Image 1: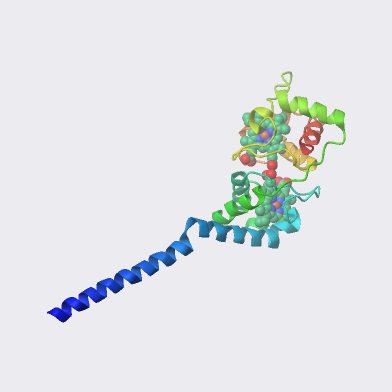
Image 2 (image 1 turned 180 degrees about the vertical axis):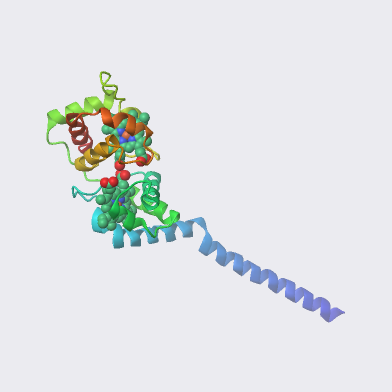
Amino acid sequence: MRWRERLATFVLTNARATMAVVVMLAATVFSPAALAQADAARAQRIASGNCSICHGEQGEWSSELVARIAGQHAEYIARQLADFKSGKRKNKAMAEAVARLTPDEMLALGRHFEKMQLPREPAKDVDLAAVGKALYGSGNTRSGIAACASCHGPDAMGTAGLPRLAGQLAAYIEAQLKQFGRRERTNENAAMHAIAPKLTALEIAALAHFLAGQ
Ligand code: HEC
Ligand code: HEC
């Protein structure tokens, strides 16, 4: 009987030791910190391998054709990427770019670009920017345009669910306001569809000029 007891103790002790090693290994590989690090590394690889072609290495690209994504909210970015993938928001270049991304990668990419700094370029046309600033802060009661600041924030910095507009490219802002106005941008649109059709071409240009310089 004694050898049996000894064997049982041996097996139990070693089983406990083996379990401890497994738990320790799992903790290193699957700990939140290690996972976040792996996500960040993956986002960095996808960003430099794909996104940078159009958005620049730092999400700062200033081509007329794309959006600036540096400093944009991570959750907003992730949602737009999901919408481009599902076709809820339509853009051929972006649909191809996100076709194989998982939801985790989308959020990791959002966090990656959120950390980047946007270069500041003060508005060149001070008068046009002043018109945009007034409209942004107070809206236009005559034509029933709500103050943009009431949703996008007094400094146009947005929130997790609402895009930051400060420092965005003027051409991109104009294009989006026109798309909302024509109901071509159709994701999460109730607010912007009510506002954009009421904006005149001059108001759109003024808002875009003011916001790009923020
Ligand atoms: C071939 C060019 C191209 C590539 C590659 C590309 N993008 Fe884009 N991206 C665009 C264009 C063009 C737009 C503007 C779409 C529109 O006008 O609605 C855009 C828009 C976006 C937006 C929406 C911005 C906003 O403010 O709503 C996000 C977010 C974005 N891209 C992230 C990414 C990420 C992340 C990658 C890499 C996985 C990527 N893009 C790769 C061209 C590209
Ligand atoms: C009632 C709230 C509300 C008000 C007021 C509002 N917006 Fe928006 N706006 C939104 C929401 C919500 C979105 C995000 C839509 C989405 O998630 O796709 C948005 C998106 C946008 C976008 C697209 C940004 C991007 O990165 O693609 C622009 C540009 C914009 N708004 C400009 C304005 C301007 C200019 C005004 C004032 C004339 C204004 N908004 C007023 C709620 C609002």
